Image (tube, rainbow, N blue to C red; front, side, top):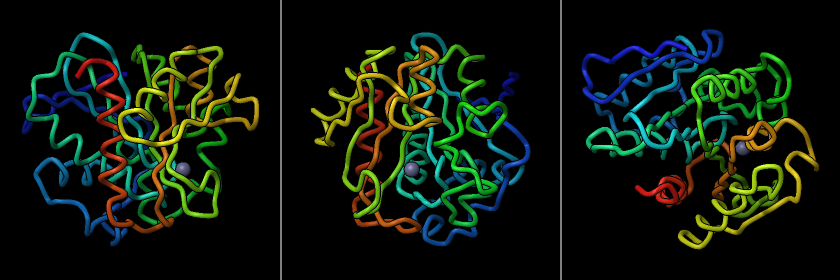
Length: 246
Ligand SMILES: [Zn+2]
């Protein structure tokens, strides 16, 4: 996977996961109205028209991947990921950070949970599905840990602010979840073995492949941005990074 320097930003490189998932995320008004129009955010939205971009900041240390938009209708984490990138692009980093702010820009544009009728958080084990391509990229890049950020509506599953993790075969998943829970208060949901309840979650398949991962959920209606939900998602992301010594 080839990354290229982005000329307008000193500390940013980018590549594409694939070129068949692009969309105009600005058409998602609820999302767009929460995005500050910085040069970086405009750049990310422009690049998302042509596929799923992946961005890189920093070099050396631990390789971390922060994903949002696996479900296009879950808006707070996608907004939070952009805010995080805008904060970190100003900083000297001791680790290597990869960001996928819009996993499926087309789904974000259309405010859809699925991508081409496929639930990306149930299809990571399916060869060459969009989420499988993200997994392949993580393996190619030597990503050490993955945080996958979602939102959940009241009366859906899980329906409360939480962090999914598992104890086997990647026990660090459980430790990271407990750390974030202690820092931001989200409830830990833990399984003894990754992927034992349902198949194909990004987090589970990463854990099964030896990349410890967590799924962080904030409470928010689908297709909407509840007061404080993007801020809470951002707190979860920062806590995930804090675990590795930021
Ligand atoms: Zn989700």
